[in-house]
Length: 475
Image 1 (cartoon, rainbow, N blue to C red):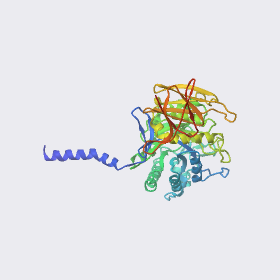
Image 2: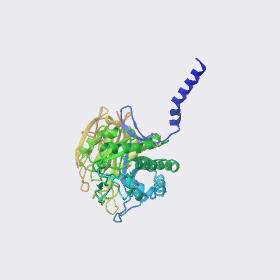
Image 3: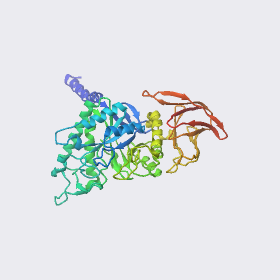
Image 4: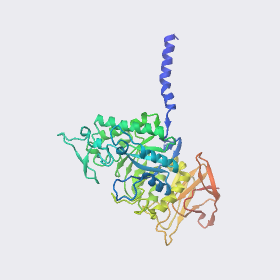
């Protein structure tokens, strides 16, 4: 081989391995990955992380009882959540063009570190629910006529916001607007890389319900192209955070899955219909999850259904939504109510086994008492799982309106069991070993206490206490 050929070969090799060298230097905070079986899940710092979050927003109106994000995160942690979703406003970060204020975001990162929680950001930028929202967009953007959506006569298109009257729309085809918002995305990433050393921010929702008003009066193609361009900033950065989108309503949009720079998307169905949740979670998509759903009285049923069918779940919202009159995890006085206790119990159990659920295939999970939208007070059902029969039995009590909802999982010879309140799990085979415990950060099972069973005419009964995760080995 001649000298110039050797040099050319070396040059080609260098060009080929350079991207690998650069990618090895990337900091991957979070990403969406797939198992061999095809199960998609969120990975944080190289480990599976169950997407189970609660959402809140810092309301500008005085009638809201709490508008301090760190205080809201405290309440989320009290309810057992490990991920807190909050709205990050362009207005707060860049109130004056070119002048940044990171204090609000930094305060959230600090509190998340203190509470050992993760953060999921909803971007309040150029298009919030199909319009330029004066509560979230900075004044200079509201006054920037050149980037506003115009009709064929050159007049501004006034968009119906739903709860704030008519306001301007942003032109998704405007290059100046796109450049400005992409720069803001890059600035956010750079700030996180410098200031979020413990990787609290793990998800970034690009815009919010941009289909809400007929795809911002421009149609689906330009809006999705705009969102994908914003997502490209995250993909090109050497500090990697997973990106997502949400859509208003109960209709899925396969076009979003074709976007290169959006890792996943989910619907905002706002329904307590469990079959609708099951249908949406089982729709083919990159990573199935419910992006928003109110804290209905059967919230734990909806959560269990989502997780058991291979998806994630985000509850909107932490406190009562006085704008849209939707129930929250807490009541009007920020006190626990019927929903709070069940969600807390389930979250504590989920936290014990979340890393397992995150990547577990649907074929290894069964759910109980979710056949109807609201659980039965008296429930007794056995189902097949990994060649054995596993069941759950609950019963009515004076102060219990609904029965427990539960799920059972199988992995490597063990059954893992969780529920939202006290109940009994049933096995046809003799339980050889029963314990309550949790998986640690290394993925190892840590036993807390040994449990017992007793024999009944229809099987072997194992008592379950609220908040536990049980592990059972059968003969």
